[in-house]
Length: 281
Image 1 (cartoon, helix red, strand yellow):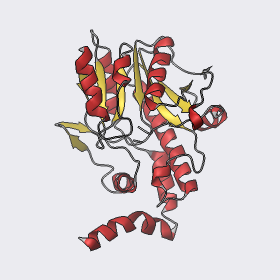
Image 2 (cartoon, helix red, strand yellow):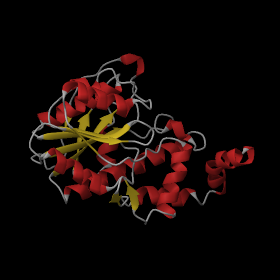
Image 3 (cartoon, one colour):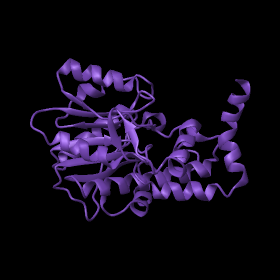
Image 4 (cartoon, helix red, strand yellow):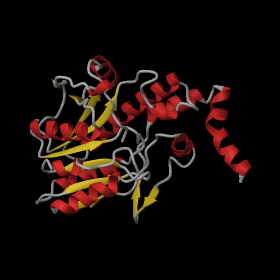
């Protein structure tokens, strides 16, 4: 998941931003962590090779595809989808960008762990029996994993669901109870996040249902992987941990990358680092 920064550590009043057509009575609330698409502030780890405008556009299509994925999952499981958004004052961007079936939660705090914990608390406050935080960096995340999360959290007894990322973080964390300890003493934005979260769960005796590993798109290597998945191996089934997870069809992302491909410099910019490594090898 992306780290959320607030300048100077200043705080802001919290407000609930309801939207129409939200299934507020759904058993499982899932909120993806969303940053407004301002050039120079969104997906900056992809600059270069992308320009700031391209990175912001990529952020927007990721948000749309993750939202669509949640709505698709809601057709198969008792799920309500939300965007836990920032910065404050960006409600209009999300209102105009996301479908009506996605609710909004104002979630902008100095520490990323606090953003996650606040979002979990807001989901429970809205009446959901289970609360899940999700990244917005995995537009092709298999819908089946969202459904599996809701089903696992619907089982009797306290438990958590963790979706580990290939970079050592996690793309999803679901809870049936607010366990503050799961967000404490975590080295956010490092390769130790998932392992430390599992350690905290063991400390407090919470059973963890672990999902297959997925990947975040937050650097040029993962951007190339995404492009290959969408236009090469994207239609094939990904086999992970003995199970089959078909990638979500990220139509908005595919359309943007297809459009960028018409820029003769785009492929060169994205592929040049890999070419250089091959030459050095």
